[in-house]
Length: 246
Image 1: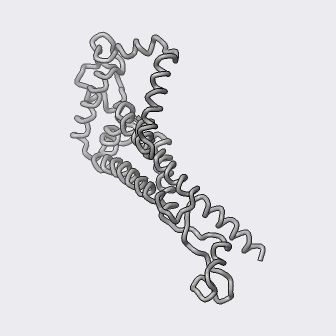
Image 2 (image 1 turned 180 degrees about the horizontal axis):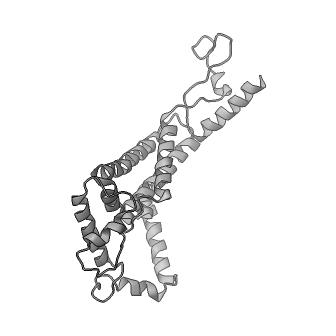
Image 3 (image 1 turned 90 degrees about the vertical axis):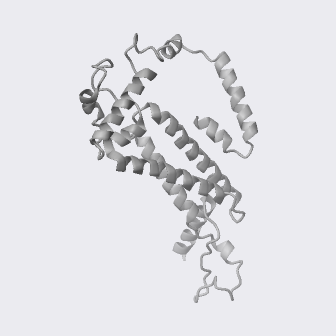
């Protein structure tokens, strides 16, 4: 899912989709696949014979989660679904005791309540919106090519990552996974970097007229705020080094 979304976000999306299709065909044709994988696929819809985490079992866990959420609108506390499962299990223990909810989004609802689920949804919605803004920022002609590539590629990667989790998280309880919150942190950092102007180096400032507002009373060029991104960060480092040398 993440690879598909990443390909669709590219400027040459048709070419990217073709490359992915060819690669997938080659992998399915020549890559060795263990027989246990196909045996696992056969457990889908066979919960009468196989009492494991098949798709039908997950549907049961999700229904249990909705019942718990109805009875506990403020949540039951983090990591407590397994402890509450036996009390609400209406299958008579068919799938065993202390089962996982196997759904990150329902995990947020059950363990953090409706307010927590709303915050969980807001985090993803706001993060995706922020990365779309960064993609638009990458089209700014005032940015240097390096910064434009950085914003465009990184925003696409984070959008693909979050999209993959929104789908994959439907089959696993991963609300408290470090990778999720690390991703939110990267989104916040990239959004702040793209929105906040960064000073460029002295060479760019010295091109401005001394009569303009770009010069201080002491005759030293004041920093200009026309750029941001990796190249500008390097420029800030050089400017700081020159200032310390003086």
